[in-house]
Length: 390
Image (cartoon, rainbow, N blue to C red; front, side, top):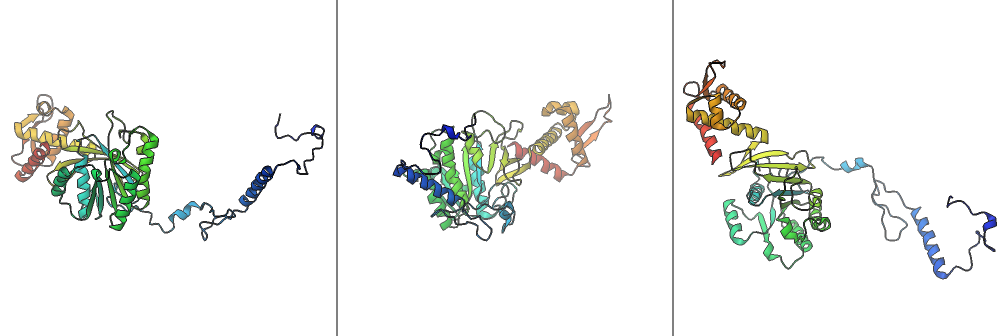
């Protein structure tokens, strides 16, 4: 039966008249009826928002209509390009999450970033603009002082240690940091580490995590480039899924960068940065190696692996003075096809020599260059490999 079907007249109660308000209604019922009627009338009189009047007044006393508008108006007055401070990683209005295992090098990478922002010099081979920084750090004075000295940090970098803010709530800290950044012309706010500063009791509790990251989203909304440092979970995960705690954290930020060691590289100084981002400028895969004067960029994983294999083959040829594909494969632990490919590339570059026809009974033999190879290039190539091994 249709509940909305009219009730037949013969079924009406005695004395019932639908066109006449019942005198038996109480004052409260009459007031409620009047409020609902007035509310419906006010809703019908809402004025549409226009470009000339982006927030239109309505008949609701003290209320405003939402500024609905054509999506094309989003571009009005906008350049359409992200104002990067460090291209692909640090931008005003965005939240970047840096994660990695303890002792993997997050702190070192973080201070390299701060140094690049201070000087306006490239970070990981990417252009950077000079910017002031406020660092919320959990490090104590001693360890912090050594990093300040190593990276020659100056007055453009400000800080607050967690031990100095234990009496304040996380929301108060972020609000105070945002005001301080604006008062001192600092564009970047760094939080190291997120869970410690936000005092998150349960990292797997989405509500708690969202409330904590919400404060940083407000800081980003105020124009700051927010950088958050976190730890990775013990179990592995795909890009963007290895961050410790609730997925609410990774879902709430704009850029996720995971710093990892890779077992495929023999060079223990090499690290892989894998990223998931809302921005196409962010490199998805970048390999770097920590050197005396900062980080050296080795390209993506594929190119970095090929470069390391090539240097390994070159070093084996230099140490053995000569070797066949099988010899060099045994010395390097690389597949024969990989050895042959890099051996031939080294020959074309004039770094080694090759004899033999490559046929059965007369295999190719690669020799340490003594004729066509230039001594300077050989020395440089050997030094490059040995530096990478340290």
